Amino acid sequence: MSELGRFQDAFAAALAERASAPIAAWLPNGEGDGEAEPAGLAVYRNTIAKGCVDALAANFPTVASLVGDDWFRAAAALFVREHPPTSAALLAYGEAFPDWLDRFPPADDLPYLPAMARLDRMWTTALFAPEAQPLAAEAFALAPDALAAARPRLHPSLAFAWFDSGLPGLWLAAREPEPGEMALTDDPQGVLIARPDDMVHGRLLDAAGFAFLTAARDGASLGEAITAAARANPAADLATLFAALIADGAFSGLDLGDLA
Amino acid sequence: MSPTAGLGLKPQHYAEALAAEDAGLWFEVHPENYMAAGGPRLRWLQAVRDRHPLSLHGVGLSLAADADPDPAHLLALKALADRFEPFVISEHLAWSTHRGVHQPDLLPFPRTRAALDRIAGNIGRTQDVLGRTILVENPSLYLPLTGHALDETDFLIDLTRRTGCGLLVDVNNVFVSASNLGYAAETYLDALPAEVIGEIHLAGHGADEGGSSLLIDTHGAPVAEPVWTLYRRLVDRIGPRPTLIERDDDIPAFDVLMAERNRAHGMLAKREPAHV
Image (cartoon, rainbow over all chains, first blue to last red; front, side, top):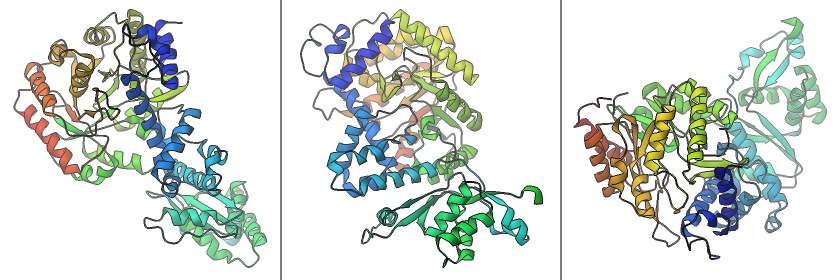
């Protein structure tokens, strides 16, 4: 290996160990002898840690606001040591953070936290998703048979998920600029997150809406997706459900198949 | 690109940057913050670019790594360059990625002849992919290392000769490194040939919160007066160059940053255009 490569291995070890010993061969006489971390090495280490923790705080704002700055930065610093970034584009950093929080003992008292992190991740992913023009209601002005047979393409920013409790409602409330009362209900809830234009928006999704989108994601026609929604909740107002999804910008295309 | 003064573009200032009509105003961004498929950040950058010249100032290519530049990162940079047509693309004489781990900082290395070969190769590969030359910036340094075969200025000059790259001279980094490692900032700046300098950076620094006597390149304060003095001295010698006010932490109102930018702009406007 080249000297440059050996130095970089040694420097990475010195950063991890907070010690001068690994890079002693490149330090002036006397500076690499002791146990203490040289001040300059600490500057690099602190800058790296701040960069990673700041990126996590930006990507998981709800988690950060719920636990407070001190708790968040301490936890994030531990996560960074186990899961350092692998890319210079830190806007996507933290994919492993929700699962890591799930196994983080100090978060045992905050059982809602990993879900908050998953929902933050869905939001951040939607924020940077590819652009696509969402379909307006006019795109669906087709003869009933053609409409039922058409297969919708979901907008590339669209994300949705189902939870066994009211975690999505808690998350949406926590994201309000001035969070009001945040109560966690036991009722299962779905959530829809999309960025059809400039803004990401999120809302609660009921069982029928979740069934509709799940079917559509799996390639169903609109007729099949509506049937799935009605099966999930026979009392659902299907016309309102569909209109709301169009207003969400949930669709970016419609494959008309042979009927086109 | 006429040698005017620009400003680092921050998301909280998008609307004001878009509306600004100051003569010669340009903006600079870190391409890493825009390496996304889509979204409002890219839309804002497009809108600002439609009104103002843009510079892409990379912080993540890791040119001084003992490895080829990450092909995915290079392609993402190339895609941004193709879309936004920056008047300049720059990077740092530093490394940050090693064995697949990215450390978001600009890390030092012993300036050996072998390191010069490796980094010249990395710059060459980058320029081949981009289809244009880049500027390379002097880093801020915090740790005295031994094993240097070349001074930093000689190392940078050799890189320009081998690769055709230019230099981005960060005057604040020169001031900070000179203070931290104990040399004269004026001597450093005087050693750099005018014809290879394509851009100048100005930023603020601060004391080490860890309690050492080191100065830290925080980009979290106004440009310090000794740095302005060094800047004036440099521009007196080499002529005007595109000059950027960088601010990445403790970011004040747009007008406050524009006042610093206008100070640099005024200093540039007093001088004849460069003959290079």
